[in-house]
Length: 307
Image 1: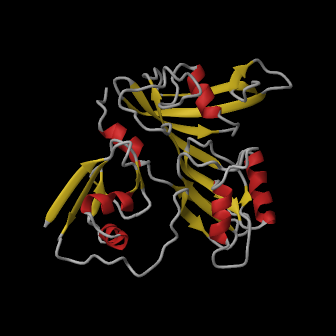
Image 2: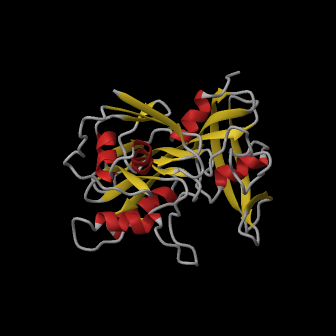
């Protein structure tokens, strides 16, 4: 057996299959076959997704027999860098959004937004259909988002969000050590001329934002927290933790100097929508969908000294 290991750099970051193809000096199909057959690991964890995005600092190991032909598995899966499917039925779809992906286009008409890519996906096996937006995630945030496949279903889900019924749980790594094991941020947010959000006094121009948190792990200079949204205002988690002087690691918008960390070298921020619970608008069933912690956050926590 042959084993190759290499650390990802700024120049080699990208899809896992492309990285494997380069270090093994093999074909595109062979590199995907190596991944399909369990020969590839990233930071010690098995990788089975050819489109898995690699970031600088990731360690990739390929263990294989150079004399063997590793063929791709016959079953074809949907391959998209912007999302993976966490749950789907004929009425709705829950996707796991990749960090760096816009949910919807800005006024500049950005291409490859999540709503566009999900629409292409749900139209793949049927006539052209549009994914109906229910809620959003910031571009820099990864994790779970729900779309309706029909306008009527989306409207019912939107109503649930308006009534604060869905339970939205996030995982975050924030700068510094939070003093309390759990707590609640209750403040009013407004929007500045540059579109940044900020905490302000209650007024007709502000929105109440309520965020609950619980400490999961304290490190020497950072804290891993579970965050539960009661309200869902734009940039809510990021603004409230920054206002408390504990910004999300990697956040270049809110308290950016405090948000810097020598071991957080990612382009994304350390915030992930990890769990989403809602009532299915057609069946009435309570659904809970969960997403594993992204590799970047898991790697940071494994390498941190607990206190």
